[in-house]
Image (cartoon, rainbow, N blue to C red; front, side):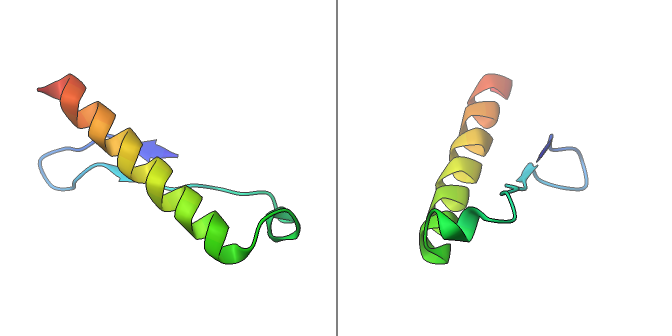
Length: 50
């Protein structure tokens, strides 16, 4: 889920995973994927707005 930035809040990304995602990847791996994905989405949107 992605929320565009506005005057009061910065851009925000929430990554949702299937309830069994920890059976496919370790939780640390899922956290890394979520963090990288969120940062990249925010970076891309920030570049588009500039």
